Image (cartoon, rainbow, N blue to C red; front, side):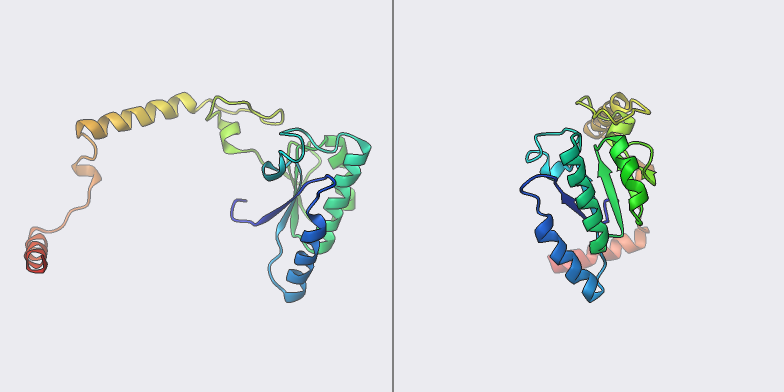
Length: 183
C-alpha cells in the first residue's frame, strides 16, 4: 500500500475533509486516478486526535468516522483503510460501503487486514499497538546480522572475491590507459 496515495481524515472539529472532498471531486471529474481514503487513527493526525488512541469510541466520534468513510466513498476513493476503530463500528459500516476496506485494528469484518511489518515481526523494542500481533521476534537476529556485517567490513573480509564483479584483463588495461590519457 505504500505506493498508493492515501488521504488521512481525522474525525474532529478541525477535519480537513471539507477541503479534501472538492479536490477529490475535481480529480474524479478530470478522470484522474483517485486515492485510497484513510479514516480512524492516522499517524499524520495522531497529535490532533489526542495521541495514538482508538477513534470512534463514542457515538459522536463513530458517526464522524461513518460520515468521513461515506463521504470519501462518494468522492470516488477506490478503497478505504479503517485504522484503530472499534470492531463493532467497522462491522456496522461494512454493509453500507461499496468499496473494499482494509482494516488495521478495526476487527475482522473488513475486506482485508494489514499490519506494520515491524509490529508483525518484532523488529523493534518499542510499544506495539493493541491490534498488533507478533508473529516473530527478529530484532535480535537483525542486530546480530548488522553487527557481523560491520565486523566483516572493518576486518576486510567483506566484500570477498565472490561478492564483486570482474573485468577481463585486456579490458582493464584498455580502461586504465584511457583513464591515464584523460587525467
